[in-house]
Image (cartoon, rainbow, N blue to C red):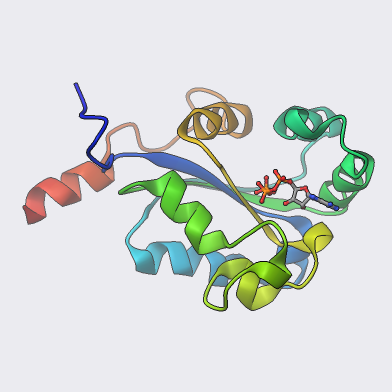
Length: 160
Ligand SMILES: Nc1ncnc2c1ncn2[C@@H]1O[C@H](COP(=O)(O)OP(=O)(O)OP(=O)(O)O)[C@@H](O)[C@H]1O
């Protein structure tokens, strides 16, 4: 059984380049940052999600005043969906993303380097391990992930 005090080397997160990020040609830049950091790309696809899928993805925000605008934004073009695996992937992914409001995101973060407004913040990242699992299941229905083994864990074992 894994030790809750140890970072999980085989943790997976769901990262999604939003329509503005895709439109601005930032897929490669964003993926490259995760690969260079040491995360393993487990699955990826360009998708045109349905309204129902987006409403499920953002279900926690359904009552917020910006919800209809958020769904329209996410429907405005293709998104690029990724599963990335590696050491503390969820927490590290959020740190690499920056804060929800890009103006408060530090330079060096994805949002801090490439965006200015909350309503066009170019990239999503799971905020908890439980939500990552739900989001991976939603965007990559069971059986579609090309990797079943933990590649990151294998690399880690080889190097230690
Ligand atoms: N006040 C707002 N006005 C407009 N859009 C907003 C606002 N707050 C949040 N959003 C949009 O909704 C998304 C989800 O909001 P949430 O509070 O979950 O932030 P987040 O976890 O940083 O973002 P994401 O879930 O997309 O990674 C934000 O990334 C942003 O695109």
